[in-house]
Image 1 (cartoon, one colour):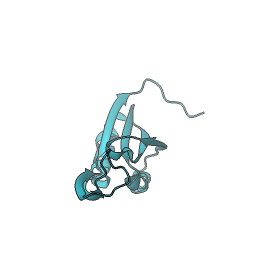
Image 2: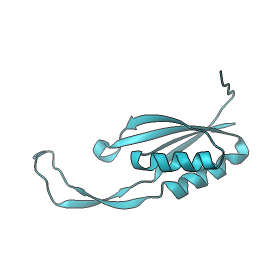
Image 3: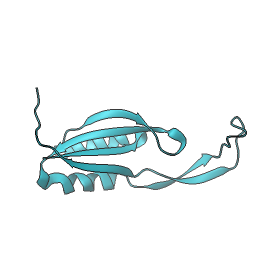
Image 4: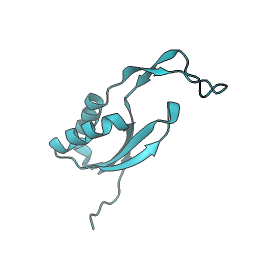
Length: 106
Protein backbone atom coordinates (compact mmCIF):
# COMPACT_ATOMS: atom_id res chain seq x y z
CA UNK A 1 0.00 0.00 0.00
CA UNK A 2 1.10 3.57 -0.70
CA UNK A 3 0.26 6.95 0.76
CA UNK A 4 0.16 9.71 -1.84
CA UNK A 5 0.63 13.14 -0.30
CA UNK A 6 -0.15 15.90 -2.77
CA UNK A 7 0.02 19.66 -2.25
CA UNK A 8 -2.14 21.68 -4.65
CA UNK A 9 -3.65 25.14 -4.93
CA UNK A 10 -6.93 25.68 -3.08
CA UNK A 11 -8.64 26.46 -6.41
CA UNK A 12 -7.88 22.93 -7.68
CA UNK A 13 -8.91 21.06 -4.52
CA UNK A 14 -12.65 20.62 -5.20
CA UNK A 15 -12.03 19.49 -8.79
CA UNK A 16 -9.39 16.96 -7.72
CA UNK A 17 -11.51 15.61 -4.84
CA UNK A 18 -14.45 15.15 -7.23
CA UNK A 19 -12.28 13.36 -9.82
CA UNK A 20 -10.83 11.06 -7.16
CA UNK A 21 -14.26 10.12 -5.79
CA UNK A 22 -15.60 9.49 -9.32
CA UNK A 23 -12.76 6.99 -9.78
CA UNK A 24 -13.29 5.21 -6.47
CA UNK A 25 -10.59 6.88 -4.35
CA UNK A 26 -10.92 8.53 -0.97
CA UNK A 27 -8.78 11.36 0.36
CA UNK A 28 -8.30 13.33 3.54
CA UNK A 29 -8.10 17.08 2.95
CA UNK A 30 -5.84 19.34 5.05
CA UNK A 31 -5.50 23.12 4.76
CA UNK A 32 -1.91 24.32 4.31
CA UNK A 33 -0.02 27.47 3.36
CA UNK A 34 3.21 28.06 1.50
CA UNK A 35 4.90 28.66 -1.78
CA UNK A 36 5.21 31.85 -3.77
CA UNK A 37 3.07 34.68 -2.34
CA UNK A 38 2.11 32.41 0.60
CA UNK A 39 -1.23 31.60 -0.98
CA UNK A 40 -3.52 28.95 0.46
CA UNK A 41 -2.81 25.37 -0.47
CA UNK A 42 -4.57 22.11 0.13
CA UNK A 43 -2.77 18.92 1.09
CA UNK A 44 -4.50 15.65 0.26
CA UNK A 45 -3.64 12.30 1.83
CA UNK A 46 -4.65 9.47 -0.49
CA UNK A 47 -4.19 5.82 0.46
CA UNK A 48 -4.03 3.44 -2.52
CA UNK A 49 -2.97 -0.07 -3.44
CA UNK A 50 0.43 -0.20 -5.16
CA UNK A 51 -1.05 -1.08 -8.55
CA UNK A 52 -3.34 2.00 -8.58
CA UNK A 53 -0.68 4.66 -7.89
CA UNK A 54 -0.26 5.58 -11.56
CA UNK A 55 -4.02 5.93 -11.96
CA UNK A 56 -4.09 8.52 -9.15
CA UNK A 57 -1.04 10.27 -10.60
CA UNK A 58 -2.82 10.63 -13.95
CA UNK A 59 -5.90 12.11 -12.26
CA UNK A 60 -3.66 14.64 -10.47
CA UNK A 61 -1.83 15.52 -13.73
CA UNK A 62 -5.09 16.08 -15.57
CA UNK A 63 -6.88 18.01 -12.84
CA UNK A 64 -4.04 20.18 -11.53
CA UNK A 65 -2.20 21.14 -14.71
CA UNK A 66 0.16 24.14 -14.47
CA UNK A 67 -1.11 27.37 -16.01
CA UNK A 68 -0.09 31.02 -16.29
CA UNK A 69 -1.70 33.66 -14.06
CA UNK A 70 -1.38 37.46 -13.89
CA UNK A 71 -0.95 38.90 -10.37
CA UNK A 72 -0.10 42.37 -9.08
CA UNK A 73 3.58 42.79 -8.26
CA UNK A 74 4.00 44.03 -4.68
CA UNK A 75 7.44 45.14 -3.54
CA UNK A 76 8.57 44.74 0.09
CA UNK A 77 9.64 48.42 0.12
CA UNK A 78 6.11 49.62 -0.72
CA UNK A 79 3.74 46.85 0.41
CA UNK A 80 0.63 49.02 -0.02
CA UNK A 81 1.50 50.13 -3.55
CA UNK A 82 0.18 48.10 -6.46
CA UNK A 83 2.80 47.72 -9.12
CA UNK A 84 2.92 46.39 -12.62
CA UNK A 85 1.17 43.02 -13.03
CA UNK A 86 3.50 40.04 -13.51
CA UNK A 87 2.89 36.62 -14.99
CA UNK A 88 3.49 33.63 -12.72
CA UNK A 89 3.07 29.90 -13.14
CA UNK A 90 0.15 28.62 -11.11
CA UNK A 91 -1.38 25.22 -10.49
CA UNK A 92 0.44 21.95 -10.74
CA UNK A 93 1.06 19.69 -7.78
CA UNK A 94 3.80 18.52 -5.47
CA UNK A 95 3.41 14.78 -4.94
CA UNK A 96 5.09 12.41 -2.49
CA UNK A 97 4.50 8.66 -2.68
CA UNK A 98 5.51 6.75 0.43
CA UNK A 99 5.24 3.13 1.51
CA UNK A 100 2.68 2.33 4.20
CA UNK A 101 3.33 -0.62 6.47
CA UNK A 102 -0.14 -0.64 7.93
CA UNK A 103 -3.51 1.01 7.36
CA UNK A 104 -6.48 0.69 9.68
CA UNK A 105 -9.85 2.41 9.68
CA UNK A 106 -11.08 2.61 13.28
